[in-house]
Amino acid sequence: MAEQDALIEVNDLRVTFPVHGGVLRRRVAGVRAVDGVSFTIRKGEVLGLVGESGSGKTTVGRAIINLLTFTSPDVELGGSIRYVPTGAELNGAARAAMLPLRARIQMIFQDPYSSLNPRMTVEQIIDVPLRIHTDLPSDARRERMYELLERVGLQRAYAGRYPHEFSGGQRQRIGIARALATRPELVIADEPVSALDVSVQAQVINLMEELKHDFGLTYLFVAHDLSVVHHVSDRIAVMYLGSIVEIGPSEALWKTPRHPYTRALISAVPRPDPRSDRTKRVVLQGDIPTPLNKPTGCGFRTRCPIARESCAQAVPPLVDVGGGQQVACPHHAELD
Ligand SMILES: Nc1ncnc2c1ncn2[C@@H]1O[C@H](COP(=O)(O)OP(=O)(O)OP(=O)(O)O)[C@@H](O)[C@H]1O
Ligand SMILES: [Mg+2]
Image (cartoon, rainbow, N blue to C red):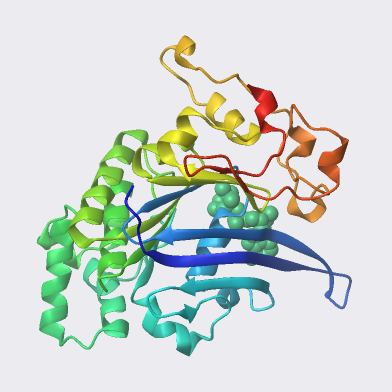
């Protein structure tokens, strides 16, 4: 891969949601949902972000688009998220400072049922970002709305219909059209197909890939499932309990996963020929702990087949293992 410019630089991002208790609703604890995450999103790439439920993927995406303080005003944020083209700091930025950037960073949500206002027509839904972020006159906005509809595979005649008149796949197409209305550079897609029937998942992913090429987009593609993400991603970051445990080029990570957690995720993917699975199977016991009582040291050690006492001492840093892959496990070589 050629050297690419960075679009987003995330450095030591920390997100803590306060937990309130007692009659006075005082802060009694904090949920460290994201615990010191650093990565770069390069211009034009698809960065996949995978991990089990609760690992912090959505929180990372919402931190980048600056939605956290909006929905949880008392959230505690640390570290930085830099939008490289303008040098702006996104982490905890005020709404006014964020407004011009919101046109350049858009989001596609997981649930195409709840993310579209049921009282608005398709035309009104797509018009909202155009009214907020552009000064196009109404006929130009309508023209762009029609173009977008066609571009995502929906007929112009649908513009006057309401979300409930569409299938899940069609609704996600409407959500995609809305996200692209302001001609963004970065699209954060938070599990964009996991609420859809398997038969339409591939169609929506194919559409997203076409649009990426046509509009020169960059994606942060969040998913549970490595098998969904590895086809579309240039690089993949694997999260566990608020930390990135491994990051690297998609094919390298898929073929030679290094971290025991990445191996477990890949072992769990059904393969047509079990003998083609060259990596040793790692089967995980138990569930992911909650970030409220995260283990000391390496967060994965309570479920790790090669854990030892020293793993409780300190959080292992991401270390380069060649080929662009970085792994947060000093003992990973033992799995071979
Ligand atoms: N607004 C909030 N208030 C309190 N805790 C929260 C809030 N949002 C997320 N959390 C907690 O932060 C942790 C990470 O949640 P997050 O939704 O980012 O995970 P995820 O990887 O996206 O999971 P999923 O795959 O289920 O979508 C979880 O323990 C979750 O309960
Ligand atoms: Mg999520």
